[in-house]
Length: 122
Image (cartoon, rainbow, N blue to C red; front, side, top):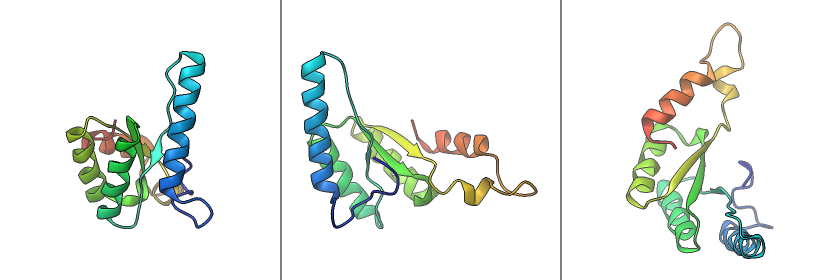
C-alpha cells in the first residue's frame, strides 16, 4: 500500500486488503513463489489501527505497514500488538522530511531508523 492511500471513498481499506490478499494468493498459486503486500493499517485512532490490523491478519497477511506520522507512542503500541500476533511490522517513512529536510537542524533518518528499531519495528 502507498502511504497516502489510507481509506478513500473510492477505495476503502477493507475491500483493498481483501482484494490484495486474493491477488497475492492467486499469484503464489500460479508461480509457486511466496508473494506478499504490506497492508497499510495507519488510521486516525489506535482502535481503528487495531481493527485494520486484525482484519489484515484474518485475511492471511503476515505483514502490516504503518506510517511514521502516527507518532512514537502509537508506533510502540502497534509494535507490541504485532509481536503478540506473530505479524511483521514495516514502517513507511511518510513524514520524514518534517524531521530531516533542513541542513542546519533536524534529525538524520538513520537516527530515526534506530529509534524505530528500538520501538519494535521490523
